[in-house]
Amino acid sequence: MSKPTVLMIGAYPQWDMEPMERDYDVHKLWLAADKEAFLDMTAPHARAIATRGELGASAALIDKCPKLELIACYGVGVDAIDLAKARARSVRVTNTPDVLTEDVADFAFAVILAHLRKVIDGDAHVRSGAWSAAALPLGTSLRGKTLGILGFGRIGRAIARRAEGFGVSIAYCDVAPAAGSASVYCDSPIALARASDILVAAVAGGEATRNMVDADVFEALGPSGLFVNVSRGSVVDEPALIEALAQRQIGGACLDVFWNEPNVDRRFLEFDNSSCSRTSRAARSRPARRWVNWCGTIWRPISPGVRW
Image (cartoon, rainbow, N blue to C red; front, side, top):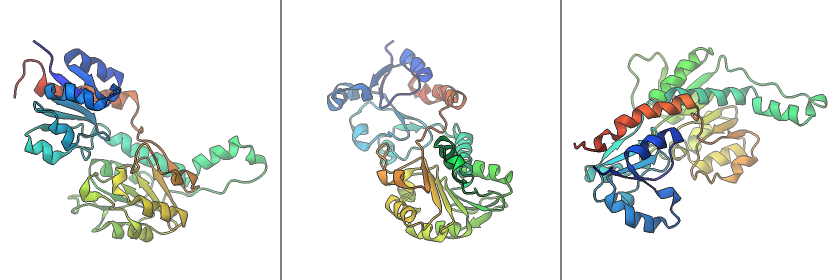
């Protein structure tokens, strides 16, 4: 029996590529010199699209695949997949929820502590030889501050659990108050920012949250406030954030997602009150390998000999 044809948009880690290539006829779009010609040849036969959260699957791509049954997203976010088109075509969409929850929450706290305690500045201070010539300004304690969490889903709640151990007050904003939560509920991002010393965006991406964190939110956060984004670049009005950093309307920002990844606006790199990272916070063998277990579930509908 022939293997099902899979159109793969971007590479997975090697430990997942091996079983994929063993069990399926994998066609790798990212390696094609002429991608349109590659799609014209491959897409008509594809029963599945294998993608990643940041790559997604557009309506145009879905339309090129008349035999498509499944779009499998190697990640949590599906905002880059045209879900309306998939629904209209009765194409199943799968993702890997909760695989990275704890790791993203870890990363959020890593950058918060690094910023407040001036870890990056301290490293540069020592490496430059400035230690003998000048003192490094003192950092700030996290204890006693209010941490505002925009989006109180899996990741938001994991961040809140970590905050409890630091003596931090927790406020949050979501579509409705969370049942059983003792944290302070705010009914808008502006109200949350006004109540917070640190504002963490952990909300899902997509049109419903596009530019949710805007100039008004930064004004409410204020000149001593720290903004952290571990959600999606689309959640933030990026020109407004750049202006807030340039004018010191907020105290700082820690970012690992951006509007136009990987082509980050160069102005972010000029600020001394921001830190920039790429979305590699979970690139460890243990959490990444948990995806292996998910793959069996994700791909079972198109396994050889299996029909829905």
